[in-house]
Every structure is written in structure tokens, then in C-alpha cells.
Image (cartoon, rainbow, N blue to C red; front, side, top):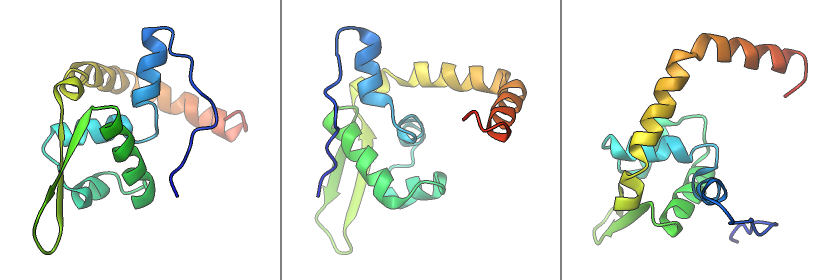
Length: 123
């Protein structure tokens, strides 16, 4: 059974649109790793071991529906599937790279803030 979102998003501005297509715990990482050449589901699972296969498949499906990636199914046994970025997906890579650099630059402060908030029960 397919998961259905409960609310129809407001798509009135660019931030609403980007939120609709890339928000999801693993979507940014999936796009990043597909761009780095990790195209098979098993490779992606190994790169993101904390994510369940079911959730990864669901988020890959959403990225495909939003035309950020394509899925190629090879007619062979055992079955083989590969994902690749579309032009639209490739256009997100500089933004994702910039976000990653920002996270690297502020990682110690952010980690402390998150750990403190978790310890205090604020998150």
C-alpha cells in the first residue's frame, strides 16, 4: 500500500516547492550519493545504513516522481536497478554541496546545540 500525504502542500513560492521535493530525512543524501556514482539500491543502503530499505525505496520513488532522478531496470537475472540524476536533479548538486560545506564549517557548534537540546528534551 502506497503512503499518502495527509495535507496538500501550499505551493505558492519557491521555498514551498523545494520543500515538497527535497524534504525527507534521506533525500539530500540520496541525491548526493547518486551524483557521486553510487547508483544501485544496495550501494545507497550501505552509504546510509541508519535508513531502512523501505524508507529509502519510498524516498527514491518520491525523487523519481518529482523528476530529480531516473530509475533504470535492466532485463536480467538477478534483477538490476540503477538510479541517475536528471538535469533537474543535477541542478541541485551545487546547492547540496554548499549546504554540506556550511554544515562542515559549523559542525562542532551545531553538534553541541543539537546534543544539548536532545539532553534537555527540547527536540
